Length: 319
Image (tube, rainbow, N blue to C red; front, side):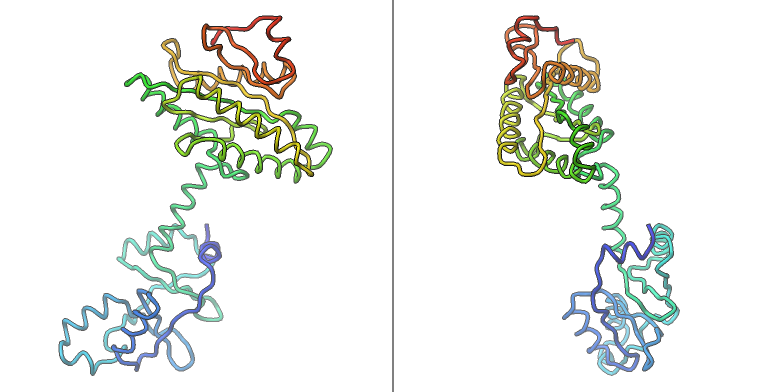
């Protein structure tokens, strides 16, 4: 990321400036009134000649004591100002600030002073970039790698404390046809709306992620399969209800549910079982849930027109 991109995220605010001949009391008033930590110091032609920070002000109070009120900004400002340009790499400038103990840095371009950035602006940008690396760019949900990390953590908790763990895989039925017929913009809008619906229908401590172009997964920590299945039934009904109201292209979903047991070695294995089940639900006609039967090892399809067909042909084991 370049400094210009950081400035775009920060937004354009009016830069508070001060002249070198202004009193320290005026400087203190400007800092306090605007809740800022530093002031660029400019001459009559608005050329940058220094910078004065809160730390400079505090040091001057100790150094000058009673004479503090007679001093001007030029007496305490830093004249050799470290600056950056809008096309500089953000990481390089951040490293320079850390190395030199700088908390504020002016951005200077050919036309002069452009803005001033604080160390907090850089730290916020780093947090934002870190979060973006863990999120799906379209939906804002956990991406596959991050969701697997979460799932592994919950699986380790299951192994240590035997707390139940369930996982659901959710696939949008007919997504390829919607993309072909309506275009990718309509498909993207549908995926974003479905992702919001999944978040709305799950608990705050459940984790929802996008694991494929048209596929999502939900990690249900400390959740028995029966409770996870009930949640998936609500999701199925919410998708149907939304489809009845939709003016734009909409689809149904297929859902597969799996759970942790003694034979499973890691979190990925649970997700793989859920993915196999969502495929069976889709193959059975979609708009349904393939889940472990609660009184045995068989799986069953719930809520779809294919339910009777599944009952006639028999189920399959958890694995």
